[in-house]
Image 1 (tube, rainbow, N blue to C red):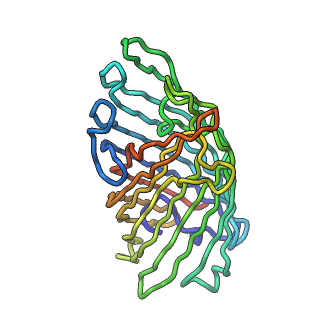
Image 2 (image 1 turned 30 degrees about the vertical axis):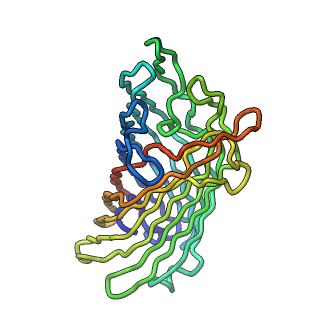
Image 3 (image 1 turned 180 degrees about the vertical axis):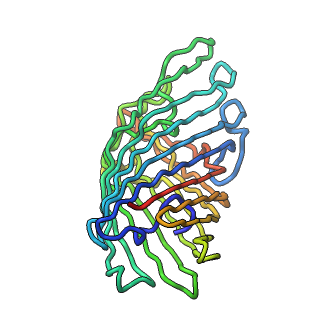
Length: 319
């Protein structure tokens, strides 16, 4: 499926195991108002800078040629740099185990007889194993500081259980070329976390749904050497409304980012290496209505940071 740190499920046969290690780097340094970059609306007119490194280990077992189970254990290291109420730029940092997930996936058609096209559906659960209360110094206008939970964007976890829905499909288009589609949606039944936004706010962070989708074309550039390339599109986002439970409660940053998604994959025997660098082509944040503890809605301007750069590196091996 291209260089996303994710191998195709068809790489794993019945009773085989696959261990995959993935690394992602996210960088952001442009403040958005709706769909326009405008740092003058950022805190004290200075952009917020993000450096987020994450790594995960995924162990997959194929019970049959059509059904597999995958356990993913992530670790996150995130830094957010911003000008605080003391008018000085400070960096906040978080590090720790993320939210572990278990997903079962099944091909709708027999892979042995449908090697040129198939569709897989997956469903799983995400556990709140990662902390959403990692603290660092929060600097006030009088230059004093208190320990306070860092921004939700760099917390290792979101504080809630989740249901994961996945779809994956591919189809041979012509010699050595396959079209692919992949998508995932995280349903978060919990409306609010137990973490307040920085003082003087009395609003809690929400536990929002999250989605991601990819579509494109993969081409076997050098089949004998196991080298393939891919080019497509990618979208990542947080919806305005949760599917269940969440509504508009708490504070969230609904919006989406669209990327041009080039990648490369190299297979050597039972090992596969992947690399990709999605390039942002557009992004937008949506106005939301923060619900305060007394039940009254308060309009929230569509502003904040969006990922400017992504890098994915992956390695997997079948056993």
